[in-house]
Length: 291
Image (cartoon, rainbow, N blue to C red):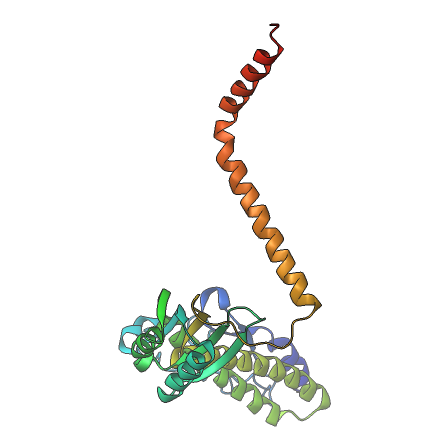
């Protein structure tokens, strides 16, 4: 019997269900070719399929325990994050020193943004540091100047890593089984059908690999966002000759300063307005009184 009718009908009936709750990635299991007497052979798809529900068992589940039940035996995976604000006398020199400290700790500078705009210098650095040197690096960065704020955090992603790793192993086995079916296809219809299924399962596999790679990178290097600002006593960055925009900016700053002064004065006099109004009324009536 030809393979195409049975293969096309059975490809979408049997499934390979990836573990993970809401992130479940369904994968249909391909059926085996038909035998010479018209019966379907189950030898090609029986590997990795449980006898009860027809779902693929993930590698390492021979003892019946799900991988997430053994998270405690795995190495902890913790994502470290932090943000700091430090006031320094020389922003450029402090930023260069921060980069040197991070590189010396086997980390890397992911982003470095600096600006002055004719006013106080400032810089924002995004630093990636190994977990073993995270706390020591935070202390050295704080010593660059006067620390204004610090926020540190951590997230345990051990279960996510174990879950993705288990789903990857299951998905790789599923892809290999479909490739074996593709090698046994002998008609154009069979090849097209199996190749479409193989393409879909390969895309699911690559998506899982990308997610695990991104999560592993976050665990391998913690993230520190460092904000450096110049102190008020630090001299402003040297600029070129003054122009129209400089004058316009200075005039606008002066206008805002006058507006703030007027607002403060009005706010200070507002509670005295009833007293001043009454005093003015008495003076006006005394002047209008006939001699």
